[in-house]
Image 1 (spheres, rainbow, N blue to C red):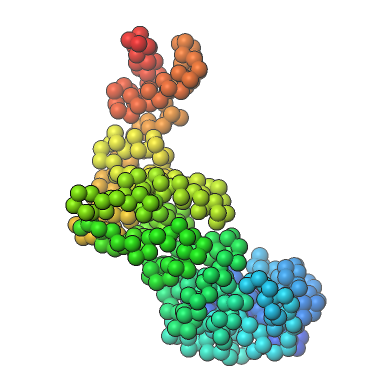
Image 2: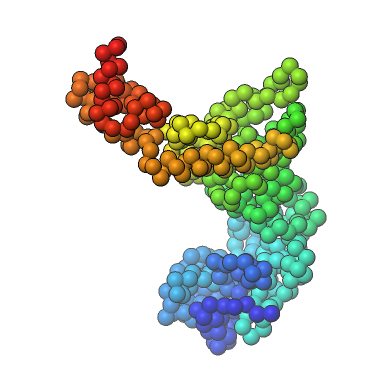
Length: 444
C-alpha cells in the first residue's frame, strides 16, 4: 500500500534521506490518505533539529512557526508543510501546552507524546508505512484509542477530549472504552481551554457525517462549555408529535440538515429556549410558547461567549429566534416572508423547518410538500422580478419628500407602499404608488 504524494512533498522527503536524516510524513495526512479522505495538511517529523531543517531547505521559504517546540514551516508549491523535530514533552502547565520540550533522535519518543494511535502512523518513500503503536489495526477496526494512559493524555492537553469526539463525528469511529471513560472523567478540564479552540472543534464536529450519534452519546462533554444546553438532556417532551427528548430531537434535527456551519449551529441551538418556556396544556402535553424568541436571546449570549465572528453570531441567533416561523403557503405569503428575512435566510429557513419537523414523530414529520410549494413560488417571484423589498420599490424617499411627506413618515409610507405592492393592491409603478399614497393622505 502506497500513498500518492504530490511531487513537491516527495522532494522534501527525499532531501531528508539524501542528507542522512530521517523524515516521515506523520499524523492526519497519513491517516486520511489511508482512508482516502481529502487532505490539506502535510506534516513531517524528523531527527533533524530546527537549525538543521532551516539549513537543509535554505533554497525554500522557511518560517520558524514554533521553533521553541521544534516546528519549522517549509513552503513548497504554495503548500505549507510543518516540519517538527522528534521531541519529548515536559510537564504541561495549563492542560494545553508543555512547559518545555526535549529534542530526541528517536521516532518512538515522538510518537508516544501524540494523542491517538490513528494519528501516530508514519510514512516514508523508502520504508512505506511505519506503525509502532498499533495505529493501522485501530484504523482498520475504526477505533479511536488514546496513546498510552488516556488520563495522562487528556491532562496534558484537554483539547484532545474534543478532538476525540470530533474524529468520531467525522470518521464514524467508536471511541475505545478506556479512552471513553477518561473523556467523561476529565471533561471538566475543558474549562481550561480557550473558547476559540473549543468553538473550532465544535464546528468541525457539527459538520461531521456522524454528528447525531456522537452528540447523543457525548452531549455532557459539550455542556461543559455550553451549559445552557444541559437542561435539554433527557428532558422528555410529552405529546404524540414528539419522538425524542429535547436533546435527541436536537441531535436528529442536526442530522437532517446539510453540513453547513450556519445551519448546523442553528440546529444545535434551535430549542435552547424550550425548557425555560415549558408549560402544559389541559391534556398534559408539553407546550413551549415563545421558545424561539427566548432561544434566540440565549443563543446570542452563547455565540458571543464562544467568540465567533459577528456575522455568524448575528445570523445564527436570528435564525434560532425565528426557527418556528411557519412555511408560507401562498405567493403573497412568500413575498411577505422574503420581506422579513431576505433571500438567503428565506432559503435557510426552508431547510431549517424541514429539518426540525423531520425530527418529530411519524405523521408530524413531513412538510416536504409545503416547502417545495414555497420554493416554487419563490422561483416564480424571482423569475418575474416581483417586488418584496424596499430596494425593489419603484419610488424612493426623495419622491415622497417632493409630495410633502417628511420626517419619520417617509419610512412609514415607504413600508405602507411596499405592503400594498406585495399584497397586489397596486402594481409596482411609480405613478400608481404615489397616487395610492396621496389618496391615503387625503383620506386621513
